[in-house]
Image 1 (cartoon, rainbow, N blue to C red):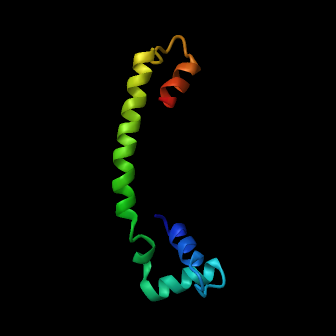
Image 2: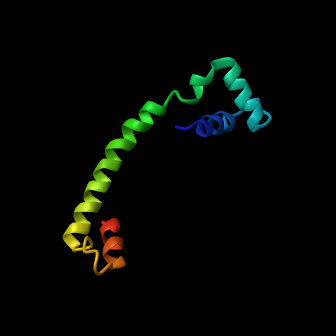
Length: 85
């Protein structure tokens, strides 16, 4: 998650005691340090990197299969179809 997700999650807790976004940000930083905002970032990367690799591989493969790689006749529907698969 991102630093904004951390603040949002902390403020959504019942009886969190935070008065505003800036109050929450300052308190989390004061009590837990800068690393509290990036604690789950490695997990986010481990989830998103493989997904993105597979997504672009399939998209590029489908563009090639549909013939969308031909620069002379740029057909948008082929790009849309490749992205929808």
